[in-house]
Length: 225
Image (tube, rainbow, N blue to C red; front, side, top):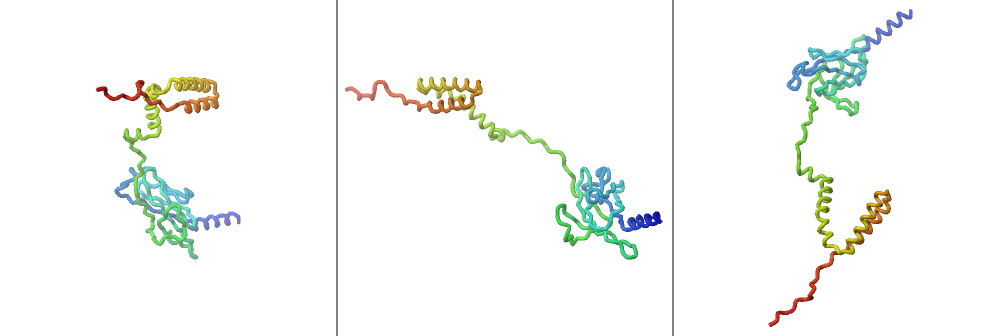
């Protein structure tokens, strides 16, 4: 008795399940199975799946009634995502063909699209993935516009201009700067960042404006007749 009930349950489940079949429509994007390579048609994130045969056909069995999302997993080619509505079987056990509609991933399932596609399912290759990224060419202007390059260039110019600035400074102010620089180096060597910062501030305050040169003989006298 139990075996007969189990057999009846299995038979009822097999009767409710449907088969979804179709094939790949070869075109200029992908002309045959050799270009397509190994591909699989999956429903509801691989809850049900089937491989694409050499003829381009596929058949997914034991699909329960309801709304399902069909995708093609291919390494190099892009296919449309489809919505498959499997109807409930009729009173006499007959089942109508599944209804195929276009579907955009991430959009609500309801309301369904008014566009109905033919059945069996027709899978059309829409494009080919490009995994190669061409290397960028050398751009000298872009390198010079880099902030790090600008900072390095400004530092280089300061190094070149420093001797001329030192020559135009007052000897006493130059001596104070040398003393403060020695203090900064000593503080940094000992790890005293606070003392080094204090010496740096004193160095900036000690730099006076360069005195304008004056004539030793005063103003030029008028020409003697």
